[in-house]
Image 1 (cartoon, protein in one colour):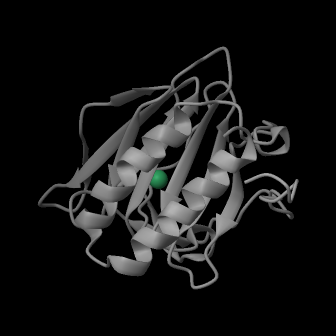
Image 2 (image 1 turned 30 degrees about the horizontal axis):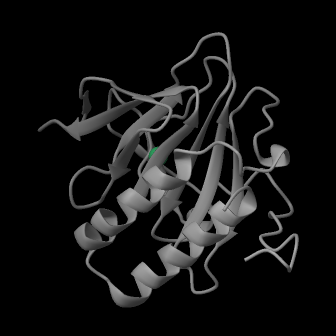
Length: 196
Ligand code: FE2
């Protein structure tokens, strides 16, 4: 199996998991090895969904479940690009396909401000999770100052359509945002109908 078939297989596996399992921890536990296997090979992501550009990072929708139970997104980071502090409201798994990422989780202090946890560096092939149950506020950035990085994220919703929050770290004040996506078309998962 090679190329886009890896992504197609991952999407099928994810659909089967969310079809039979609703507990967040169980979904994450079952999905983690699938994402690890997907990002272990870097031969399947169409180049159009790995393109950097502009002042901001790109987030390309690769697949959205028709029932909004999950979505798969490629995040492409130029040198030194990163997100503001944000939440998700749903479970998520992050896997680094190329380069390196730095994820910083945050906890609320008693006064409402946000306390940063130690940065977590993720190299290509490594995964991390976000979860409303165990820690949902974080910021992610490219870990490389001189090259782009690409990570593959899976969320328990169509994440680009979810109303969620960005935070001021000093005050903890939240502002609504809906991220949307950088692309207008999604990958063809069946480019050759003779492929299994
Ligand atoms: Fe995030």
